[in-house]
Image: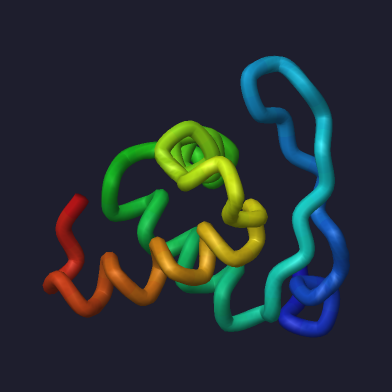
Length: 77
């Protein structure tokens, strides 16, 4: 995956259901880094975020907030 293709929607599975998610390239790169640090696949991490997010928050927004919070808290889940 190249940096230029990271901004395109990515198909993911959450609780067995397919959905697509579009994030900025820097958000994807950060998410991939966090998943690797936490020994998870990116899809597993996104599923965790989706499960824990407030129902009224969209998934893309929840992922962005998660990424920012993760790094602000020193890189810990």
